[in-house]
Image (tube, rainbow, N blue to C red):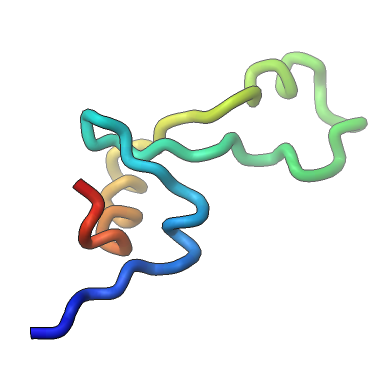
Length: 66
């Protein structure tokens, strides 16, 4: 049986935490920061964890992630 392939785009964008949740960078911070509120920029700092429904989709692209 051949090995299953991991989506290259997924391994660049997502990480799996020790508890099996999917960690991802905050969305909406690439450009256009001048029009964003200070509160939005502050709240979107760092990383976030995907919802369970979205995590299920991402995990299907990463067959060997823990």
